[in-house]
Image (cartoon, rainbow, N blue to C red; front, side, top):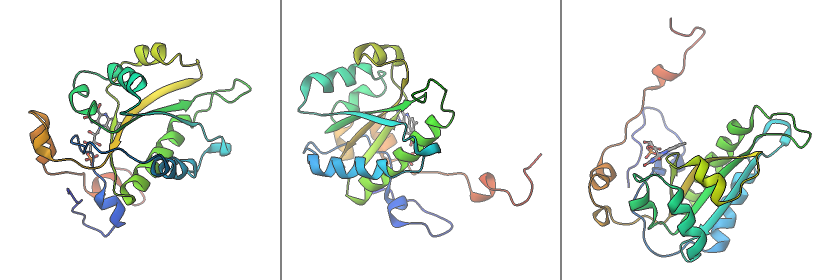
Length: 192
Ligand SMILES: Cc1cc2nc3c(=O)[nH]c(=O)nc-3n(C[C@H](O)[C@H](O)[C@H](O)COP(=O)(O)O)c2cc1C
């Protein structure tokens, strides 16, 4: 557990969420995964467009799972290949009438926030990955033009840090750090 050490009190689920690389091998039940996606679906979105889409594979879905692993960059493959579930988070970038939805990435982020907090509340951990080959992902999964692959998510129950090799082992044990509230939130005026 790498509980966030906060200056101000926050929800316990927010404190508990962190991004591990060591996952236990046991699977995530389909019902549990549906709960997590349900949470994502209840995020706010511009015009209630709900531009989030998810493609997921359990480790046992060998072919799709391996395709996902192959799309990841080498820094993510060694540990993500052992996650019980891989999820590809996609943003629908255009409304059905062809107009660009400028809020699509924002709204996918909100949905991902819901997803990961629900997962945390259910005892799961997730790790977002922007390190993947976009062109390859588009090709492998035959993505239509208006679906932008934004992040992969490794999801599962926490494993033992000792499963990992360096440099991942050290990262797993490293303390978590954040900017202070005074560095990100400003009363009345932004700093020059
Ligand atoms: C959009 C996004 C992309 C990320 N990409 C990667 C990645 O490719 N590989 C990786 O190991 N971690 C990745 N991370 C995880 C971040 O490094 C991590 O969230 C950050 O260091 C804060 O740590 P915490 O999530 O444990 O609080 C990504 C996180 C986000 C939100």
